[in-house]
Image 1: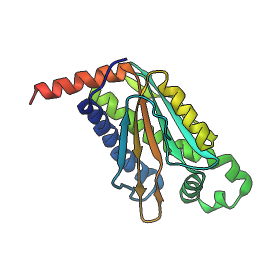
Image 2: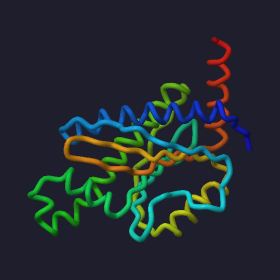
Image 3: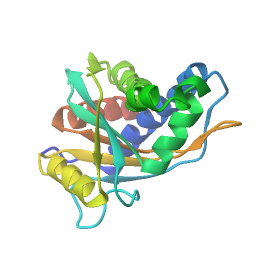
Image 4: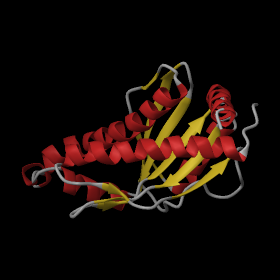
Length: 205
């Protein structure tokens, strides 16, 4: 497994951050109101720890997954608590849908997948443009798990020799305030590309 140093991991963090800023712009158009990205905190890990990967607790945690396809390999995970998912649904969907249980049941996951598509695509596009590789996001999927199941899922991915960057994001507007956790899992192909990019940036200084 390629070792990635702190500078290279911070480069990856900066690329993700640029993608999330673009995601806020796209969400503003989608939600028809100005959405900003508030200050975030993040952690970077090169191997799986024994502690928890997520601050989300309880049952029915919503995990939206987007696989990176193309010249580089990775996985985007957008994680909401059940309460956060519901808050986003009822803010994003019009009253004629939220007030109709049958239609709401049909639409409730679709709206989350659309938000995931916006956020993940924005980050993937930044990696593609900056690292100059042809990559795109696959069709997003959703799974609903408890915190223990989520931690086991992430641990299993890291055992496949993936690195992880974890962002506690915070999107805000006049009517919306939601804090999904964003996990970026990436493999050796990403590590090598980030190393090359970082080296080229340092050589230009």
